[in-house]
Image 1 (cartoon, rainbow, N blue to C red):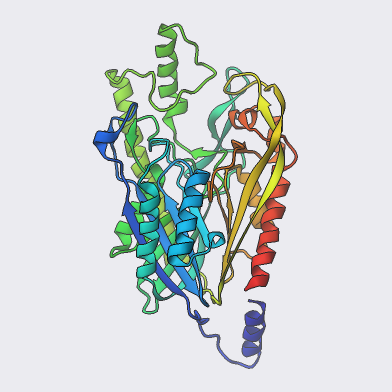
Image 2: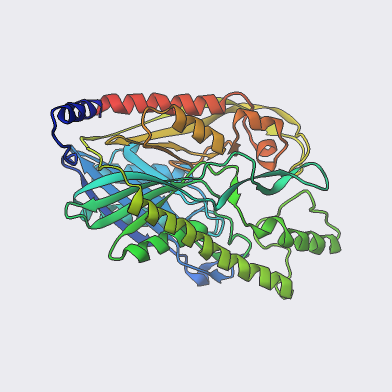
Length: 449
């Protein structure tokens, strides 16, 4: 990249013009596979399907190296799933394990547990993307979306930490966008990165891709054809949708319902819609509003992705090869010995060190750093600030699932939020380890190309 800038400056000094950088031998393909569970196979508390869920994949090839950007509408990517899928992608399609970014959208509206057909469906999506590969190019751009917010506040009544929109808390609004197109300029795929929890439909007990699914469907519909819009989960460990009913009216109704049965959940948060009377008109109304909110926020984020492609895309990247790398860092662990959702300091005993897997994919001057856990927003901000390229993003819940629980930044450990007190990590390691570890992988992959 530096050589290109120097050559460009020389051309300007000589009165010449700068041509659009060549894309070398970049090939691009994209596909998606519907993996919506059969409604008849759903178990409690799921009662049906709100919208379909997908595996979406982008396949890349340059200078003989292949890579895959894959996102699944699911809560997380268990290590066993990651190992199985990447082994098959390597043997069947020649995509090395360290050139795969396998990410979860983190929707809270897909049944948890093993899905026997999912490995085949992920491999199918990547295989179809590889089969569709054609000469193409990629350009990077950034927008801003204000649908996320820091989700940790001081409760005005109890004066203790709880969940709610903290508009003054750290929250990166960046929407990073990669647009892939063929040599004729026809769009093939979009890869976009944003930090927000997919929790809007989590109270409904209906299968849903939530906000990420709504955003991707909106983008795909707007762009038409076979365009595939692949969500990338940013550092959303402490980020919620700015409007989120579960922490307000629905929570109060649920607390009252449990209290009638003699159970106090005022400092707890049961999953999904458990404990709510679906015949209560107020509950039914609030749940219907959550469906609408998922669509509304998906459209807002999707429109920002489209706007970024209209106005903010930079010059196409020169892609001469693809490099990938990974490493595991170890941080001191702890086990909590008491209970409580938030507001009070936890008590802990020492535990085994916690492994955190880091990944890096580098093509052109684009760097995608992966972390296999729920990372707090300031850690990603620190990494992106220190990275040598502006075209850098962090995708979380990627390439497995760390046993850490949430991964707070160092300063957050002074706050008794539910993420901090439930984290299995001791303070003082993860933030520095992740940032420096990813920066090491940036250098390593840059040197390999």
